[in-house]
Length: 315
Image (cartoon, rainbow, N blue to C red; front, side, top):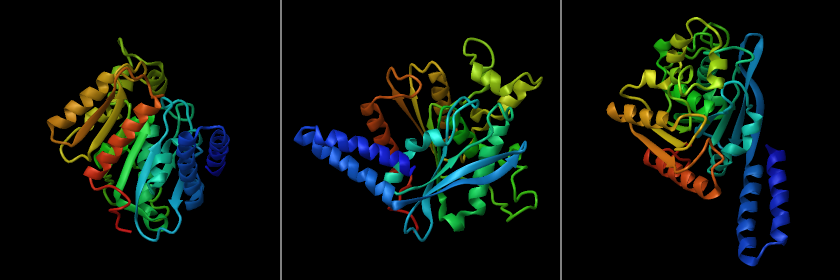
């Protein structure tokens, strides 16, 4: 993270000396923000939260220095169709939250090459369980945990936040089987910010919306449709879920935009607070600067409406 921030600062500095006065003032402000983030955060990398299939699942914790009490915490899951991606490649994605003073937990999980579905969902639930067990040490505000991710990471943010304990997706978590500190609280989160995540995995296995990444994640298991339903957020829509904000381009070729619409409609039907930010003509991410600025304005408003910010934290 420090190397990434330093590289960004160097680029901004080069631009600074060749820019007009107005642009130079804007760059100076951006550089100041990068320096502030780099100087006010500490990173604890590669904490093992679960070992499964002889593979250590790790996460990184980004903490604001000087925070002595519970702090609003963002949990980030990277994308990659459950078959690729890494937490390291996504570190710059959550810079806006670091600038807002949030604690961030950046999670990796088992990809299809290590274990097929539902392993990634199980790991994500165990990461949240790990946070419950270690909230005091890292000053996580368990009343203000927000889940987010892009694409497959958006799907994992959704499943981690909506799965009931009865789904049985956290039975292998350390601590729940008698090793280490035990956490038996029901896993709850304050909100979910879903960036073009999959809401219906079954739809992606066959037919006109079949996607190779979903087929690869489910493999050739005879009960793959049953598992796909088990890991589909739409399966668990019910009253009492946390508020959900979804961001999706209406020309997305990778995850059908109709899934975002169906998710919003299903949540509205049962009275769950939900919003859909549609990017007109937007593909699978890679939104323009203006589009991202509008999206983050919507995110800030969403967080404020649900009393989720560092200013209203209990620290």
